[in-house]
Image (cartoon, rainbow, N blue to C red; front, side):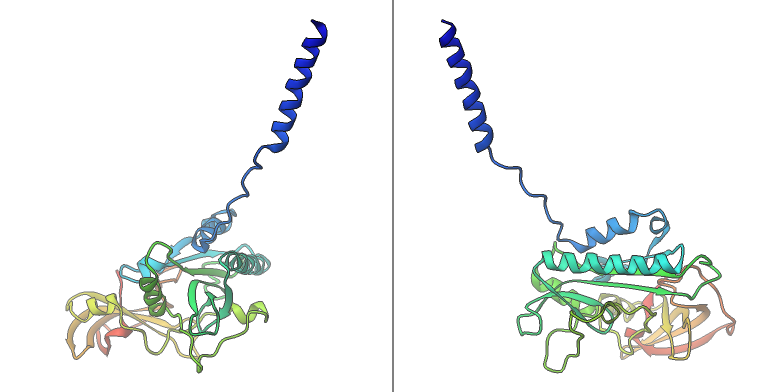
Length: 283
């Protein structure tokens, strides 16, 4: 009887051991492929960065659908550089997880599949800049601005069309890019970039061209200006997509990302006429 009991115990232990060895290993941790999710976590994972705010939200397609911009006051120049380096590494890692390659274009670094071929497809864009401007508002260090363009919830055609409107330049033999194996500075510009001379026609532009009386703004910056200025006023008339605005305010910097609204000396009112694509809706 004793021998039989021992045999049963030993057999039970053997079965448990074999079962333990043959059990399925735990699944590998999921690799996050959304850079907008990763960037959002990066923005809030540090006490200094989490004090920032979302800027340039946009109220129209495609910006409100694809773009996320965030700005904060860094604790020091050293921290700003560390954050730039870390953001860059996160972008590269996420791009690799999406089987993509980072390429630099005029305003953003884009993660793309099949780079430099007719089959090239954008996956997401990443941009991070720092500026010593606005030192009166941010005395501890530079302002850091991050922007991500991505949307994995829409179909491919809608995504590519939206990416183009937000600055992605499709492959062509004439396109100029910086190879991804060059320095970080080649991928992420560390200075403020002036507004493009010609914006694309978007849903917002169509709204502006058909809504006399709306409040609109226009940002202008020359090479010799540090901040640039924003003109603000109400649409008086529209003729052949030329929008005439009665401008009553002149503001410091680009108010879409400026940390504060800082009025500048201006006429009581002045009429500014420009292409509808030069204006954006503002409050």
